[in-house]
Amino acid sequence: MTLPALPNGATGVSRRDAIKQLALACGLVLSANSLSALAAFTPPTDLTRSKKTLLNTDQLALVRELGEIIIPTTDTPGAIAAGVHDFINHFAVYCASKEEQQGLLAGLKRIDDSAQTRFSKPFISANKTQQIELLTNMEKAADGFTADDRTFFKQLKALVTFGYYTSEIGATQELAYLAIPGGYKGNVKFKETGKAWALPY
Image (cartoon, rainbow, N blue to C red; front, side):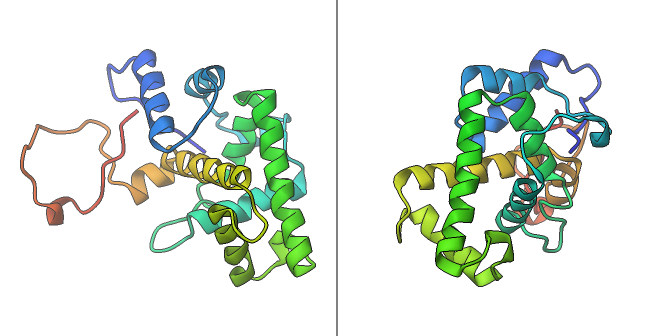
């Protein structure tokens, strides 16, 4: 997971502010300390060098699967290709508060336990129809899911979205990216741009 490079002359403060604003725009509701840590944190370029992890192998596989359901591969790469699951794991270790870490673990357990109850198998082993049905009910707080479950899933989607659109793939392939934008154009037809623009931070 690599953040797009800063344009020439940009300051660290503006980069942090931009990341905070993007996190809020994605719907991330985090503590002030967690937002500050997220804004200041630069993921390692070689993820294999970091030994610290919050998620075990099964939990990381579950986050990987959930991320791809939320942002699937289409004509552009999805969450797996962007390494969103690794981003979430590193965010949880280095930026999240203890309470937020426990909330993430509890929410993932809730998804897996619900899949075991409904389908007699872990979420990752359920078929796509079953997975989407379970997550749809979770999002609606229906069929045994609560408002707290809905809040967790909303936060997970926000974290996946944030991780994806601050990745190189999300910023340059899903969005239109220009590190140093050109002159101001006040009236541009949508068909001439097509995509929303990624922030060059």
